[in-house]
Image (cartoon, rainbow, N blue to C red):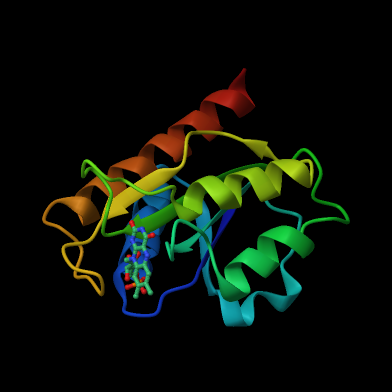
Length: 156
Ligand SMILES: Cc1cc2nc3c(=O)[nH]c(=O)nc-3n(C[C@H](O)[C@H](O)[C@H](O)COP(=O)(O)O)c2cc1C
């Protein structure tokens, strides 16, 4: 089984989450490619799972990752399984904002892709990061769960 993880990251936290998800997916037996959003011009739809994510800005996804989710997955991607992730300073606080991963999930659904799991949200300590303690481990666990879910779906 093959997966692609596309990420956007300004300060590095979302990259760390993407890398941990890749690790978890690989643990579950997937062959995974990690792609920066800037290099995501020619993604191959011949994969079993797409994961995309990045930072939250003002309760939204912004810039290239949002454009990617909006426009890129039209031809040949309908029905493809996907999951999204995001990092944000407000996650788990009383004033949690909507997260980029929610927005990305909606955009991909609008393009006909199928979510395999709820979005993964990792908290950062400050407006510019770093990731809170334990978030890398949680991200790896999320990757493992995506991987076993995918294998389970394929078997069933
Ligand atoms: C201008 C700006 C707006 C932000 N808005 C939000 C927000 O609405 N909700 C939130 O949870 N975090 C917000 N954050 C925190 C970012 O999500 C944080 O910078 C991000 O997780 C870092 O990811 P990166 O290291 O991958 O760039 C904001 C940060 C900046 C700089």
